[in-house]
Image 1 (cartoon, rainbow, N blue to C red):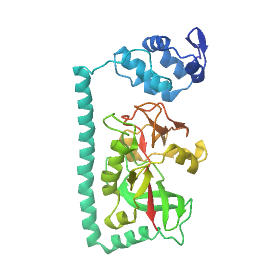
Image 2 (cartoon, rainbow, N blue to C red):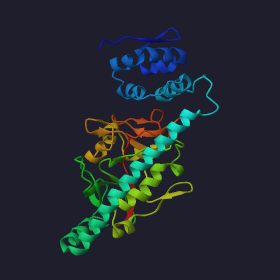
Image 3 (spheres, rainbow, N blue to C red):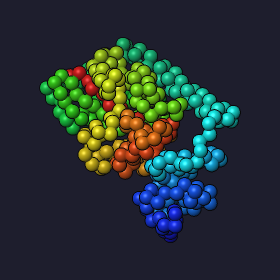
Length: 324
């Protein structure tokens, strides 16, 4: 596609940096309406931004302008926000919430049945018991070190429609006295940061609840659960499962290349957006705007102003401290 310039405030726009420096919501909205904005993004390979713009499904100018500001990481529009939601907005919000809850409930019901089935098989099979011992023995203080990959717990990972669980691989990020910090080697599922779209705070988001209830019960046996430490992840907030924040991801993953993460086939089947095999994954840090949360993009960059908390195609890359 041939490259061309946009114009904001009469200035030629050749890059996202130019756009942010000369941002004019009236010019951008006009280019959005004409389709010129998407074509400009495509011509310059700004894939992430044009995908997010194509997902805008509102016809309300105020809502569209606000969304464009979030996508491009600029200050809010000077278009007055509506004071109240109209009846259609409220109905759509409730339908969205109901659909998200129904999907999570179905996952819970299906996987709860598999957990019960696994426990029956484990109790009746000495071979299965021996396999569990082998997995647990990986968490041994005498041989575990940073960079190791170990198996611990099980979760569905196939994309063929099967909910059969397989061993989760974890990378060791840090080792302290009697405990180790683990992060899943692959992103394991695609779940919104906050299904209701109400908060970008880790302490109150639905993803925190999902990790420490549904995922925790699904992925770990009773003995494995006992090895997972409860950790103070931020002031007044303690979790067994959590996500890295922006500072931590930069500490443990020092380049864009090593931040890139593959999604399991199961995560892709659940709607995860990937660039080939590489996915975008949530961090627990709030984004620059009330409706966004921090994310590691498919290119390994950390983004804090693009991804809305109710996006369903961003992956989960769980983290936990385990006692060894």
